[in-house]
Picture 1 (cartoon, rainbow, N blue to C red):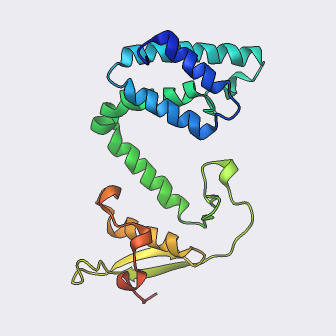
Picture 2: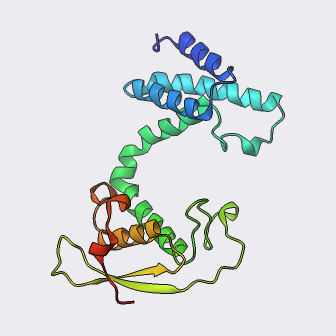
Picture 3: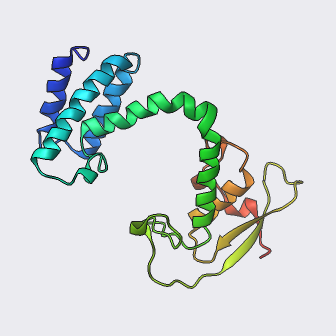
Length: 204
């Protein structure tokens, strides 16, 4: 029945008209639909075009600001669009753009970690987003930990810069990022499973 365009559009519209249909539900439904239709992208694109057309009309009727459209991802159509782009850009990202984008991510992350980052809210002293900027003045100092990989005790110690206001988890993540910088994240140990006593030689 998902291959029936009329049914699929009616199904999505009916779900979105219910007040109990939460943001998480919208994301799950959009992901499941796009996963099922991954091998039929022409059909998925046709359905998506109709949903986006409805969304634009709805936005015009409610007289919302045009710039807010597609920014909040509050509808199934917007979440489906995200997945649609993911499918179409996968090969390009993997073969061409992946490495420079990862380098950009690492550079931004390194710049942000030079200052305090709130582990609860994600707000940072050096943030690209004004909404996620720590505005109050925080006194902090940079410390250097000499760390060793327990899997290779004979390897030279690796200096890791941390802040005296970092949480234990943030310290663990910085150590893992430094020691395993040449390994994919999927092959690294998790911060929650890491015992600091095995990794750090206390020489500040």
